[in-house]
Length: 402
Ligand code: CTP
Image (cartoon, rainbow, N blue to C red):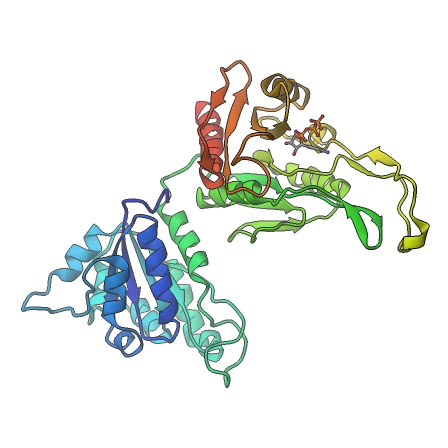
């Protein structure tokens, strides 16, 4: 996966029970195409064996500062790394790193490195809350280390509390690592607003009208924008895929709620990507109580919901880049070009609903991107994560050209 592909990651493991999850993290990095050098501290080896990491990374594991009579491993390892991740980082390791110790291989690597360092604490919730640990973390952050906040929830030992202390899931650590590896992006520090998923329009308290949108495309765009350093607001209808890390999510149900959330987010948005499939119609009358089987209506009268892109146009700031989607079945490019004009968009991403392997629910998509005054840009069948990157590359292109 892009940013991780071909990069060298030094993965430090210290002595905590969460180190079993680090094996999965090593696998995610290796699968993403990274070269992963694992460094185990002495206490980590009480919890997990080097053989596990050697098998997962296909590379030797490093353990000692002085090995086979020479002590230069830390310099070579640290200088070659594009990123250092320490997971789990115990309270003891945080304290040692905060005081600049260099008496084992991993702490020496931290001092010898130029690369960004991501520390992933995991410990008992009381140890995490202790003033000494809080002071160590503050100091580490002031030195430029990136320190992830632990999750709350049950810890390994049933006797322990459920306050923050648990190591975040490997996919979350991976997402933060990818963000640190991402090359400098024109989207860094920008506010990107993405809509995703369907909306629901109630018929009665238990029934609704909706569509098959899963939200996968919008979530992929939100993920990619966050990885590029943007502040991301994801305005999401009910999604069939997990929420991404790092983004601020606003959950909505109806098209009118989505329109209101888009309007308020536009006040500070640099980019709006409308990847959602809002319901275009809603029942003209909402029944307050459940419609009984015996009282089947002959028909349900419908009225139009708001067209969000059109009705929020006045809320856009000058220069906000707006990307829409179009799902079409006939005269695909002609209809899409009309929407590009009518909705006043910078780009429209066109899906042919009849295309196999594209559209709702699928992990892949084949799209054509239209921009004003440019030839249609037809992309091959790609993963939705790759389509997301292709869209944001073009958005960055516009930003750089200004
Ligand atoms: N969209 C919107 N508000 C709606 C419906 C759609 O802002 N009520 C946005 C979608 O998020 C998408 C774009 O408009 O970015 C085009 O959506 P699409 O469903 O293809 O077009 P419609 O405007 O609904 O037109 P039609 O149904 O006639 O194809």
